[in-house]
Image 1 (cartoon, rainbow, N blue to C red):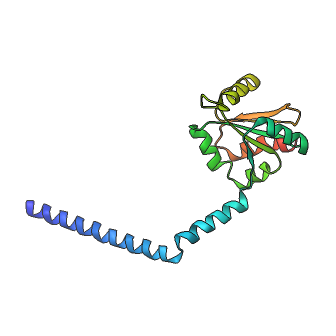
Image 2 (cartoon, one colour; image 1 turned 90 degrees about the vertical axis):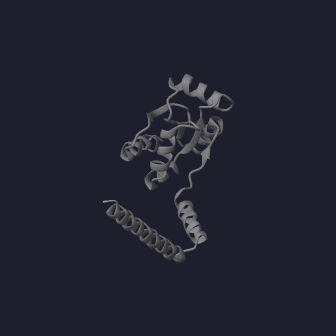
Image 3 (cartoon, rainbow, N blue to C red; image 1 turned 45 degrees about the vertical axis):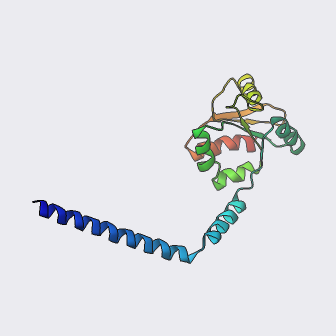
Length: 171
């Protein structure tokens, strides 16, 4: 019985070794097709062509620019440690449809989850003006600081696009 067990162990070890060699050979072949620099360069070019959103970090700066350009303001109340915020940035904000709508509005990202400035002031602004400290919280304002709409975290791209439409169609 022990003899059969040792043979099974050897067969398993041989199978794992063979699999590792095949995987290594495949990766080596694929790596030879494009160098790492070419891959990185291609990814950067593709990202730059799509994502040209300018994120301001000051509400006052965003408000002045919105008045100058007569555009609505999109406020992203976010946090450094906010998991849902990062999910929205990676999965919703990066979609071409959202990026296109962001070009039509002034975007400002206000962090609120630290005990230092400007995060403390941003949190106070969110709480006093919008009665919330929720993260993420998204607010659309006119250049005259009138609330157009507000929403929170969603995994539904169309729902978020509909929210942005309220801002882009407001002026």
